[in-house]
Figure 1 (tube, rainbow, N blue to C red):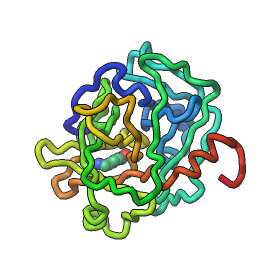
Figure 2: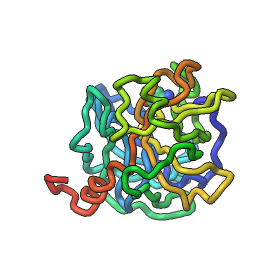
Figure 3: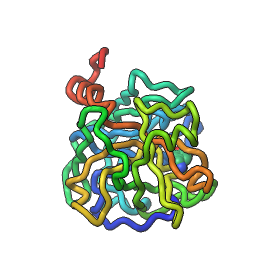
Figure 4: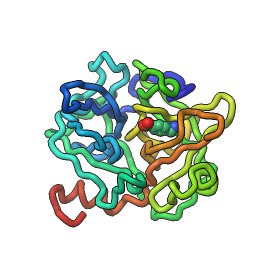
Length: 250
Ligand code: 4AZ
């Protein structure tokens, strides 16, 4: 997160960090996610683009080197959205199945998803981004969980910035006010765009409306908005996978 502020411990208890093992043996935390079922983590499909393996997830992580607040669980399966297209980034969503149910605590809780039918107008709503991603383009990640507020923008804003790369069916546009320019950055992918800001209702009552997907640079002055996966377009697939894991036709 660029220009973010430090979250409070337990404030984003459904926030999950994925630990990724590369084929060369390197281990890194490269993507965020959210706990959306007792043993299900929602993240971005593009987190699996490289030759990688996700050995485990830590739910409720606040400090990247201190796992005591988090619940660590092994990943056993990854379900990629069937319409995911790696060349266009359409339908950028994946569900990770954990080997066990997450033990719910002050720091690890379930998160609600936007289950409204597609078409509910979110434009102009305040929203929140959260993550351990880079502090500036080409920089390093944060060791403490950061958050910042954005606005949901009209689709036309991202169409103007990203041309035909933005398709509103599976994508949502969210942007920042110029000062200070907050944005998601590398390493925040797979994390949530949350409806509402932290001045309103408690984060436990809030809903996830997007997944960090792509953008040009990070808080670049020419690109004041980035692209998020539209959760309301995924409702049927999410319900199907979590209710019938392994079913071929979700
Ligand atoms: C990334 O590389 C990334 N500012 C994610 C989001 C944005 C840029 C890059 C949007 O994961």
